Image 1: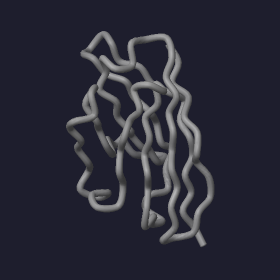
Image 2: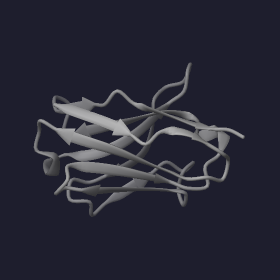
Image 3: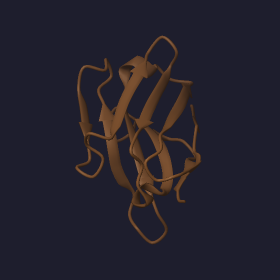
Image 4: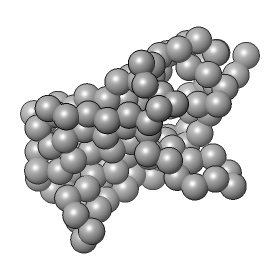
Length: 116
């Protein structure tokens, strides 16, 4: 099983980034997919979630209206479009695939820095 995040980097406040997570080694279309983020000294926070077929999404209150999660099951990839970025969005962002307690996989993360 592999989850490989990409698309992180340095962006100015108000800017945009699109994160991607390429999945392999499992039946991608059977798993809900999530994006989490974490900053040093804080617990990992769920940012956005999407159901296996992509019909249902959920967002943390802090990113509603700014971030959009989507997936392409034909490409085994989940995305996080991040607009109107704020300095407080600075974090390591992690991709997660979940289908229950014993089917839970994580990527290694990609760093997003929002700074002028």
